[in-house]
Picture 1: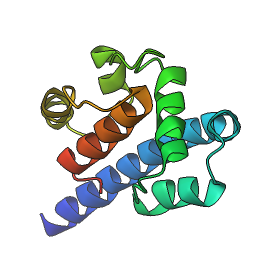
Picture 2: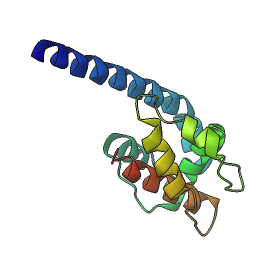
Picture 3: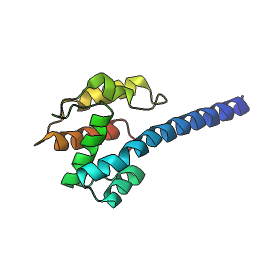
Length: 131
């Protein structure tokens, strides 16, 4: 029985890891265009992706908005496309957890669309406990 439990833990950890790799792979394809579009310093993006560090930088906020817009998770005006936003999380994350996090965070506001995207991202990742 212990062997089966170890196997299942390893299997699901591998599946989750693969899905996170796919998620970050999608981000990589959008990253360069959004770095250019937002004029963010690349090191701030690296710290966001590698350490979950949300630096209060206006260009980083617009970088996050750019990613959300390109993923169809947010309109350019800052309106959240809730179903599209939820669908961006890896399937290995329990849908109940994702739904609760998005419901909790979808009312995040900001002084503009960039600020709202930043607040939404930070809130969602904290609620799901990814940061």
